[in-house]
Image (cartoon, rainbow, N blue to C red):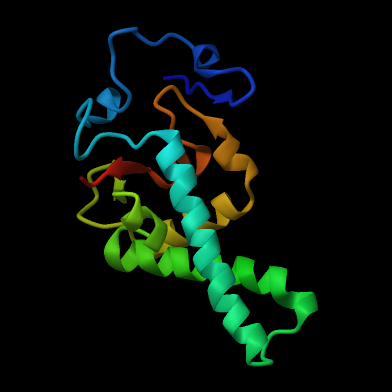
Length: 156
């Protein structure tokens, strides 16, 4: 079976054949709408923004206390974001931003109820690289979700 990918530049039509009546996530066994359906891109981006602001706030507390120097602030923010995201996805199935936006991360390979430590860390690191998240499949899942066999779905 061939895997098709597209980029945000070429649009979803370039990802290869996909029936017009098929809902995103149908091939994964997910519902077309409502709880458990694939999350739209705008909600995922909004959740990412909220998570980034939380990481900035926590790193800012460290800078205010004198633990983090201004030169290292951006690196500390990235580190806090990756650790917070991986830990939250592993423990709860969602990051703070995903919780606020009504999203959660689920495994799609039938391996259990939650996302494991390795998957959560790999997924966070791939998102931190930015580029994998720009390439999506016909369902709108980024390379980080394809590589870790996960999906971001609506929780409510």
